[in-house]
Length: 38
Length: 144
Image 1 (cartoon, rainbow over the protein chains, first blue to last red):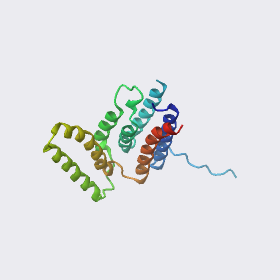
Image 2: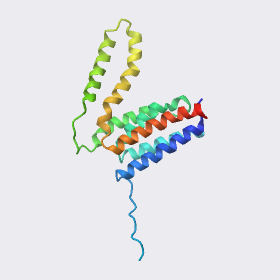
Image 3: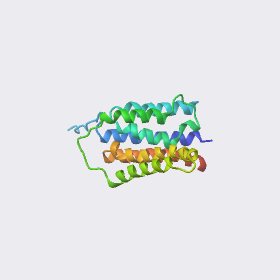
Image 4: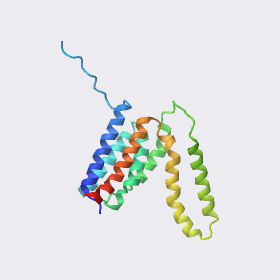
């Protein structure tokens, strides 16, 4: 029987990787770095 | 039960984002077929089936601007799929041969579809991470 914790860890890794890919491909709204306050 | 909910939520996340980036349907199919969620959770529908159908339907949505030539392995895999089917037709024991053909052809078709659906470096890397995270779920169980 598979352990729930290991599935949870793998799901988190997957979701983070997919979000990273979408950011790289500019499919997610990209937050523009703000200019420093002078 | 909690595990099933988490799995469904993750699959929904992939499915919804798949409409933004169709490669995610294919990555989801890879993920579901390696993780094999039906073995340890009760989901109403087979994830592989859903992702597979959406991946085929999404072929029309793929951005085909960068049309490169397919690698040699793509054609070799098609040749291999033809060869596997051909030998199954003329098998000495057809029943056993078709049973094996059923899972063998799926694995070969995944390999054939890979250069069609994965277009950019980021997508290829995500496919790697998806497969390794699915394997790690099984491997970590043995380790814990």
